[in-house]
Amino acid sequence: MNDFCPIKRFDHLEFYVGNAKQAALFYSKFFGFTNTAYRGLETGSREVASYVMQQEDICFVLSTALFPEHSISQSVLKHGDGVAIVALEVPDVVNIYKETTKQGAIGAIEPTEEEDGYGVLRYAAIHGYGDTLIKFVERNDYSGVFAPGFMPCQQIKNNNFVGLHTIDHIVGNVELGMMNQWVQFFAETMGFSLLVQFDEQAISTEYSALMSKVMQDGTGKIKLPINEPAKGKRQSQIEEYLKYNNGPGVQHIACATNNIIETVSLLKTNGVEFLDVPRSYYENLEKRVGKINEPIEKLAELGILVDRDEDGYLLQIFTQPVQDRPTLFFEVIERHGAQGFGEGNFKSLFEAIEREQALRGNL
Image (cartoon, rainbow, N blue to C red):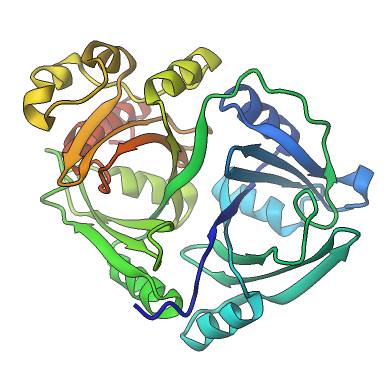
């Protein structure tokens, strides 16, 4: 692989939201994040307020505009609350922006420097699917709390910590017929490769289906599955997403934990709602997936799914959408060697989502 776009890690995800102060409270109380930095009127930011929320190596930035004509306000009006920017930490912003745009990416923000007493932060961005931006962030010469213009928040221990530690993957939904175009985009502009693909036979129910391809960077740390709808008898979850999001965008964020039973138990105690899984799923579970270390009765109680590939097994669970529009949701995942995405659970997951679609009148 020609790794002309080396990536260190997911730097952060920036959400555009209608009320960042309330969203920060939501992610703190429900998902166990800690507010570590802030910008707003008090820091001299006259148009945008942002809250930096962190949990281990996961960083969310929740931003809201203070005026209706601002582009963030327009984004929220169009898409609702959701992920607007996928930020990747890179060693050299200028070179990566040059290489990606040379390979066909459309520039959104040219290489920019911001400076304060903690050094210089460099960043740039290109356009991704829909209105999503892919932002490159270089932190080599910056030691501040997050970025110039942000002030640190008083560190108070968050008793709602749930044990999430990294972003495992980020899934995007695109229109019918556009998946291969975005696969080509990530391959040509960022040097990603195809890890695995699923067709409508692998991911389908009686009513709906989708197709998916998983792209990853040269290190395997950055995984970006891309979904598109497939024709079915009813409206698929991807079509529902595209309708209410008014176009392509980030469908869900998978966050990793080292103890999914403990994490999900804490999340449920905090009030997070998950998709329901029928008890019949757990009948003869170990015959289907082999021996696992976790008690099946506890997995059934919490609704945690299990799948196995040639490298091991994984456990996963999916939340309900985290806003009124049936768009963005979260996955919690614990890997025991498995490198897959729970393809053995696709049918069960789809049926669970379709039950929720039926309740919303959207199936």
